[in-house]
Length: 209
Image 1 (tube, rainbow, N blue to C red):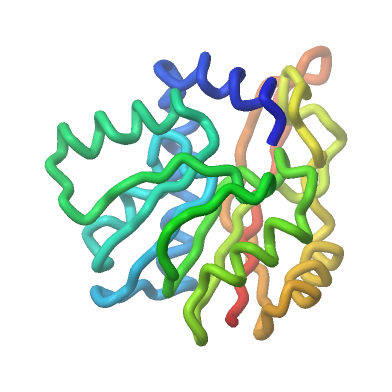
Image 2 (tube, rainbow, N blue to C red):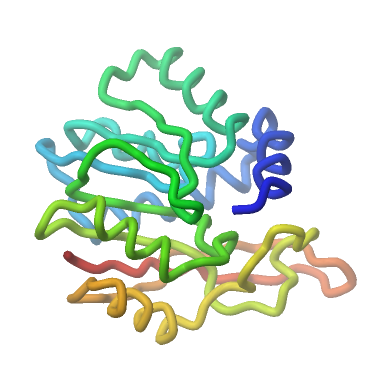
């Protein structure tokens, strides 16, 4: 992820958790939990965790959950939330796996929400996520279906205008995942410039190692 994108998220971190963001994250997290069935013995990574809206949904369900992000600002908000809530099984790591940063640990479950459309090197990222999973582990990636570039008011740092699910499934397979499935997770309504309100669907794609 480029330095410009990281700076952008750093600057937005303190005011990130607006009602629309919270509603979207809650919808995604509910779909993930239903599809992936986390258990109390699992170690979970949330890649591109941001302020931790999805991460915290897993906290009461698993042994430990680690939020990984390349934005220092987002992780500062994340860690302040963990401290305030007193969660002992939640931690964070600053890393950008697209740029081959190192992180610690192997995980039973890896999730990511609305981060992949900012990633330029998807095959490399998926392979590194695969390498951080235990045999038999699961992955769940939530992101936008293919759109026309109107989802963001500013497309700076947006590498993909959503995804064609068949294309992404192929990248999952090439990284080594199997039993790949996808479902529609939630729908987001946004006001777009000159076009009124638009609805955008977010899918969840899952796979196993």
